[in-house]
Image 1 (tube, helix red, strand yellow):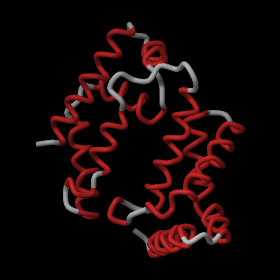
Image 2 (cartoon, rainbow, N blue to C red):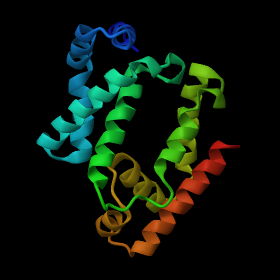
Image 3 (tube, one colour):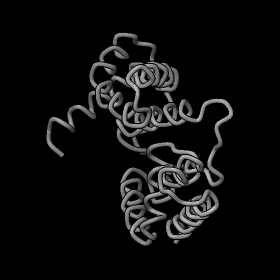
Image 4 (cartoon, one colour):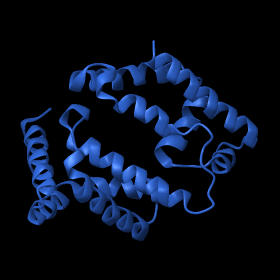
Length: 187
C-alpha cells in the first residue's frame, strides 16, 4: 500500500467518524473522495449511468445514516462503503418481483465479514485469502456462475441465459458452489 492510499484510508475513517457525529461537511468531503470509485462499482453492476447515479445517492444516504456502525476491524472504509453500494445496486437490479437467488450470496458475505471468525482486522484479510483459495477449488462453471450472481447481481434466469445453460443446471451450480465455499471456509 502506498502512503497516499494509507492516508486516504485514514482520512476516510476520520470522515466516517465525523459523519457519525452529524458533520455534513464531512459527508461532502467523503463523497468527493470516495464517490468516483463507488460510482464505478454501481455503474459496473447496473450498466446505466442514471441508475448508477441514483444508486450512489441512495448509498450515500445509507452511509450517512449508518456511519456510526462502521468498525475498522471489519475492513477498510472503501470496503465498507463498497458493500453498501453493491447491496443497493443489487436491490435495484432485483426490483419488485425479481427472483432472488435460492442460496443468497449475502450468506457467504456475512461469513467473510465476521471479524471474530479469524480474530479481528488481520483475520479479515485472512478470510479474504481463504475465500480466494476456496474459489480455486470450484469448477470453472461454478466459479463463473457465482461471480456473475454475486458481483453482477444476475438472477437465476439471467444466469441461464448468459451461460446458455438450463435454469435447473445454473441453480444447481450456484447452490453447490455456495455449499462448497461455506464448507471450505469453515474448515
